[in-house]
Amino acid sequence: MIGVIFGPPGSGKGTQAALLHDRFNLVHLSTGEILRHEVARGSELGREVGRIMQAGQLVPDDLVDRVVQEHLRQVEGDVLLDGFPRTVEQAKALDEMLADADRHVDFVIALEAPEKLLVERLLHRAQVEGRADDTRQAIEERMHEYRTRTAAVLDHYRSTGVPVFEVDAEGSVDAVFERVRASVSQATARPL
Ligand code: AMP
Image 1: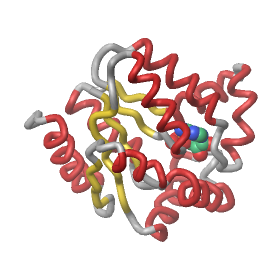
Image 2: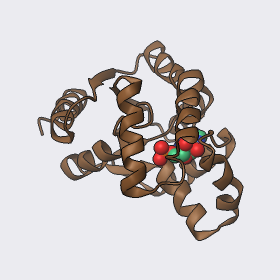
Image 3: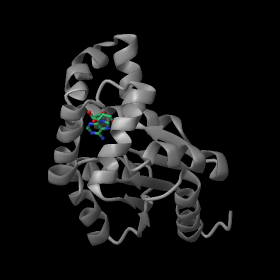
Image 4: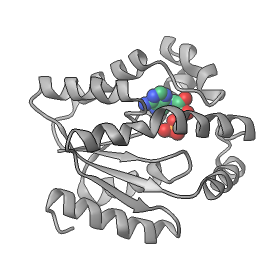
């Protein structure tokens, strides 16, 4: 089973994905985390993408597609994709990769919250975690990338018949998780 956790920056994708991993035993595949790891270890890929990420821009599709393909190849069980796909081109590339393995995206959880709240959360995270792309300027750029390039990914899934569950991402982590959990249970017919 392949699920996608989707939403704008600051909507809590990573937090909710980690909780889903614990509850549903899904492999959590976060492209942001993988790329940050590459930057930290100074690999060739990391050197290529570090500045792009710091500026809050999207890394080129072909690089991210390759990373995902390599990781997907290594997992046999259920997967939760976090932060991918972020463009319609990535979504199409994912469809092709999965079709080659006789798989497909089973559901999308789309977290939703007003932009003002998202920016507040990201600025708070900047103080707590110190992520390089949580500066005001990079946050603005990430929001812009989301609106202009990523939001359309949902239309791709809706138009190809993949169930999309819209989840209100306002409120405490636990309250949001309860909504997310209910949607995943419905999507997978697993009453967990
Ligand atoms: P995230 O941790 O998901 O917020 O991602 C952090 C940053 O990594 C993004 O702002 C992009 O620069 C880069 N990134 C992560 N996933 C993708 C993706 N699917 N496509 C392009 N860039 C990505």
